[in-house]
Length: 326
Length: 51
Image 1 (cartoon, rainbow over the protein chains, first blue to last red):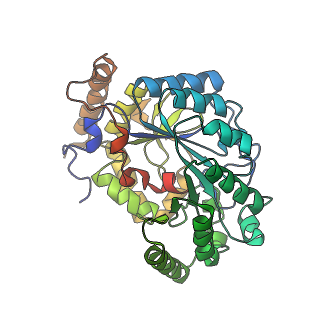
Image 2 (tube, rainbow over the protein chains, first blue to last red):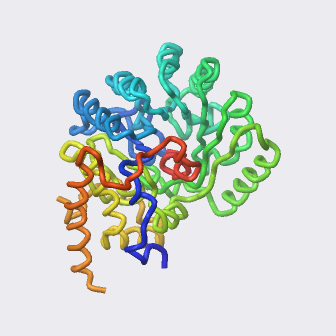
């Protein structure tokens, strides 16, 4: 049974800090996407989000503990007033950065500032290849702005990743978006099964592709992999579902921390369990608590439950500190 | 398996390892994370790859 041997060593047990921190710096966003897994939207900033001073203190802790790679995401990270300060604090200390954005606000001036930092990836969402389909999933958004942002990134010789969240609305445009990503100069195309978390969970009946649609989608990805090949764009879609990823995580928990806008640390994206609070705990303490969480019986039971029934992922944003961790 | 005993054991580990992790030199034998170890597998978690 996966994860049954609680005494077997994990890779994370050997590391003094995470390899990667995914930091959702806000729930605020300039868009209200139907498929959003964090439930972000305009005005959704949480009342207890880390302020600039607190966020910079956390950044300093990440630097102190030599975390090599940090992703700044959201919500939309570019709506956060201290985004630049945060990126500069981390980047100037040598921390590699990934920036995840919808591209609506990513202008040439921001891109120019990012070129001075060690940016390994700027990930922009292209959830459609026509304005009508793109805006159906991202109401009010401009596909032209997203494409322009992609071009600015590549023109500045920053590495561009494109991500595509498949829904019943846009799944038929997947092939066109892959071709678009290639023509824009992206080095990677990311996709996978829609996550049943946040806004997407609430809109599930309307959004979730049917099994036959997913079958055709997977065939498109497989065919595209053969056509595109190396050294072209990398197509990244495995593990395909959150459930598949959870199965793998039970055997080998990821050496990553998922930090929420209020500084809480999640055990796994599909679970509501919180193992640490970066307002109260140092990164070293949070890392120890994260590693211990993967041997906590309540967490393991919740992981197995989430693997059995994907609909339980819908509770993942009702965050709860693991009771014995308070 | 005695569930409550295991839980207690886990949380004792949390406390003792926290102390060791906070020490200036870190726990003996612990590895400093390296960018080279950030594999495709690390980055393939759906919440990283695709949100």
